[in-house]
Each structure stands twice: as structure tokens, then as C-alpha cells.
Image (cartoon, one colour):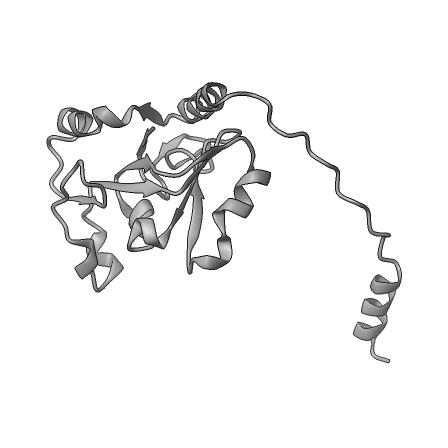
Length: 187
């Protein structure tokens, strides 16, 4: 037996006994509490939350100067046809992307987006500003989100939780380092 096989055999022999997973208590709050938690968490991550009926006016007021808009929602017409994108780098000039979210998680403000919603996988990350219109349900925890996300049904999916920010670069906060500089969630 080789040294590698000896090591792997020793690891397999010392595997801890299986433990049953704890039963998590069911959420007992109402929909208003869930939305309030979702909103608070998002706003703490520097995202903005607005009502659905104000979307068109919000875009007109806050993004009137943007040149390139990629939109998959009826309320706001985009300036770019996402269906005809051949190369994801064609989206490098997108100032504002407006897509739908399939599922929201209150505990961390995460929103499940698949390539069906983004149309082009890179869109939510390459845009300068991102607006996600919540179309799906809002659940309290990630434990409840995973079965609803149906991860295996899509070729790509991601939980998005707030605008991109990092303080890894010389301990300075950088907004938009590896994603959009701002996030607006429409509920």
C-alpha cells in the first residue's frame, strides 16, 4: 500500500459518527415582518428598497443621464436588446441593468437570480447599477430558500445581496470593485 493509500485509509477509519441535523423552528411572523426584515437587511448593506409602482419614476429621476440600459421588465424600456448579445463583453458599457429576482431571503437580504432572469450571466455583475424587481416569494431563511431555488434546474444561479463592496484593497472601502456600484430592490 502506498503512502497516499495509507493516509486515506487512516482518514476513512477515523471518520466521526453521523449526527442527525437539528430541527429548525418554523417562522411564525407575518408577511409584513418578513418584508421589514428583508428591507432592513438590504438597507444596512447600502441597497435601496422601493415599491413596484414607483419603479419607472425612480429610474427617470435617478438614472436620467445613463446611456445604456439593459432591462427585462415591462415598466422600463431598455436601450439594448439582450437576446441579440453574442459576446458578454458587449455588455461592458451597460450603465443600468433591470432584472427580476426569483426569490428573496429576509435573514440576509439575498435575492436568487438565474440566467433566465439575467438573460446573460454576466449582466448583474458587469453593470454599473443594478435594479432587481422581486417577482418571487420572500422566505425567512436560506434553509427555506434552497429547496425553492431549485438549483439543479438552471445552468446558472446566484444569490445577490447588496451592491459590491470590499475593504481588502489597502484597507479602503471600494464600492463596485467586482460588481455593481448600487443596488435597488423593487418590492
